[in-house]
Length: 476
Image (cartoon, rainbow, N blue to C red; front, top):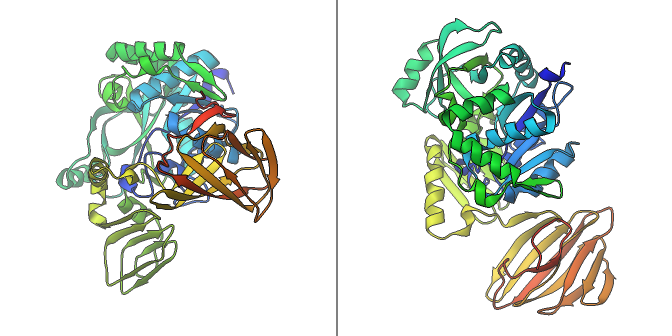
């Protein structure tokens, strides 16, 4: 394949997915969850954009998600990818510009395929063929959006209106972009063949994207260029300069460019697309039982129909309910009419305003060395389950306000406490006094599982003073 037509996938991984709370949260959003597949939505996206016609993906994501991104790419055999870290989310326009600039630097230009990380495409091969069909017009300077042929009126998606005129390569001229309509307008659009759902997937030459953005948002381009110029490498990550990037406008690519440029074109697709943006969308896309219930996890339903029922922790039992969404996690429960699942976003905002931490974090917290799960929190004590991946280690650290007891459940632990180093196996334990420098290491080939009991007046995660860290996190 000619260098010009090699496609550089750009995966935008910065979304939060508030409407899928309580599973999707700020620190562990929906793209990193498994809903319809053994792989997460993010992994499915990366796999869909892999193959002989693609370079390794460029991922633009939030700084907080960097280890999740790297780990999930590694698990599907994609390593040494370019992962660009945004210090703060600034929407898809800034992220797309950054990716285009990276392609200019890394590959001296080329075609770029910009994709959300959390959408469903059931027909992977059909999507790849649609991309191939758009290459000629993308090389010719068009900025192409893939429009989904509607199969029903829908108020949860944006729309694209096209002209009955095509470019040389077969793409259709775009007349306008339309925000999510009410039901009456959605029914009108569905009756006309010129309206399509906006998939949020874009295809163009990276140089052309910069040229067009400089016409309409020159300040945004300059901010992105300067933040990239002042970026720093951190392990396998590229950190954008936070002071400069914080000045970028928070705009979607649709608003900043596609609604203004005369280069917009569209390729229609019918590939089983869904943005999976709500519990209603997941109910529609998942095969239910004979009563129309979609059930996941330890759940029992009696005399109930057309519900989305999901538990990843406690037993969920329902009786005599219809058309509801009921989601149970270890620390939160959601009950909402299925038809009103779009409103969960506002509910999450209220949860945040009320001061509940569940709006952003789970009891299970991912770390570069593995994860920890909060099992119980009481007055003056906290119990956690630590899971360390093979050949990993927590930072060398100490705490000013808490002591810790460690009990090994599985695997073998190497424990450093001040100058003493000991090895522990299952059913063995040790004590870490307040203020003692310590580190927990798993040198084995299996997971290490440790129960940690913290005691002290203050047990917050900010009482961690890191002295050394294998993963480039801040040390003192």
